[in-house]
Amino acid sequence: MTPARPLIPYPHALTHDEGHFVIDSDTQIRAMRGAEPAADWLAVFLRHGTGFPILTAPLTISEAEAALDNTIELILLDSDPELDDEGYRLDVMPDSIRLEANTPAGLFYGAQTLRQLLPAELETPPTAGEPPAAVPCLDIEDAPRYRWRGLHLDCARHMMPVAFIKRFLDWMALHKFNTFHWHLTDDQGWRIEIKAYPRLTEIGSQRAATPIPADRKTLDGQPYGGFYTQDEVRDVIAYAADRFITVVPEIEMPGHAAAALASYPELGCVGSGYQVRTFWGIEDDVFCAGNDQVFTFLENVLSEVIDLFPSAFIHVGGDECPKVRWEQCPKCQAAIAREGLKDEHELQSWFIRRMETFLNAKGRRLIGWDEILEGGLAPNATVMSWRGTEGGIAAAAAGHDVVMSPMSHCYLDYYQSEDTDNEPPAIGGYLPIDQVYRFNPAEGVPADKSGHVLGGQGNLWTEYMPTEAQVEYMAYPRAAALAEALWTAPAERDYGDFAARLNAHLLRLDALGVRYRQPNERES
Ligand code: ACM
Ligand code: ZN
Image (cartoon, rainbow, N blue to C red; front, side, top):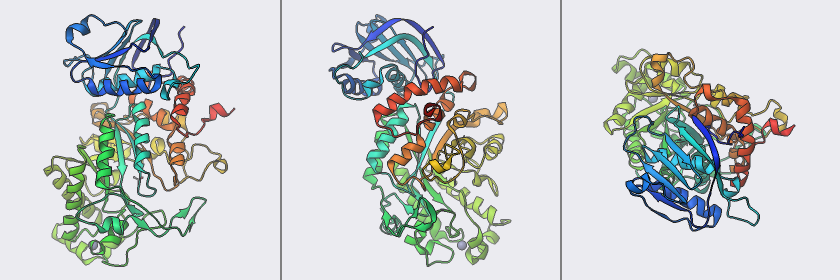
């Protein structure tokens, strides 16, 4: 029997054939109109890995019908009903490779599969003695189980440079993730330039100190700060778009707002005395919900965010908003009375609904953490369920779209081993890779509502990830397991099979320089 190919995520249907297609100095790529993005990506990849010139040229329909010799043909279909939007067919024959899809995204995923069928050595420039760039002959028909396949990165607690974000996006593309949730604002730092409010970055991007990883009650005494300019943000969005990844920005409200309040104290209930938070944890000071200036501010901020980010979804946070200030604030209490609200939970719900009206008028959809269910969900809101899946299940049952991101399977900031003494300090928890692998976003959702489950997402909160190396260590290889959980149907998944493929896949991550954690299986 032919061994399973080390593909992650594993495709829906794969049939092996005899022989190989060998890439040599005469191999060319031919792309039908609309197939250029995937063709260009593939050409750059193959030139880099083989040193061969690998020319690309247009492909006509009649040429595509008679397979061209020593050619990789990329064909954009005219809406084949048998194939999903993001699906593709890959036919590797001894003399030619045919990749077809309904969309440029589908072709890109096919190109990633082709990449994974090639030796890991192709991830780096050629060296003497490298194996030939041979692809085994086979037939694949593939499509993702879910259309939201996300990774989140908290750049507020620790900020990662643009060059790192691009590498992070490259690794996402390798695993067919399509959504990068960029957490840009929090109590400990505001990280996105907003032209209308320069103090957000002058003041809000800087904190006086950071807790030391080994002891969260002790501060290091070192000022920490930084932010992304709007040009950098545009650069990241364009880089992601080239890899068919949508960047969803998160601007936190009404809680997790200390950095904004330190910059503009009039936006808080008390009105003064705020600081960019240094300790981790939940901050009592939040945006005042009874002050119209707050809504003007947030609408102006979101207007700039909307101009930057083409994403259909804008994430407004909504999690962990203590109500102690609102309980004491005359303006908040007046808003509760004026709007006929029952309590502070309904005030938060009213706040989020108001932001949703604004976003919808701009043609965008609001997404927030599951606390936005409390006090009543905004009419069109999408819920990102993190405290478990119950919130997501309730929202789906009520006809809302949901993204499942429960702590039980998706919190990549949790420990990967129970032997925490031998792990770098982490926030807590325990989430081994096999548990991530067993994630099933639709579990518990009534079958007739499962269409509301857009997909799932892994979250990287960076309180205990001060360095790029630590983000890589926490993300991989668990993100590879998550990628398969979101792409491949549960009935087609098997952890033992995945673990075997992962051992080979790790060679590719090695070639890419990913500083992942060695899975336990390999240690013994
Ligand atoms: C969250 O982890 N606070 C969404
Ligand atoms: Zn208030």
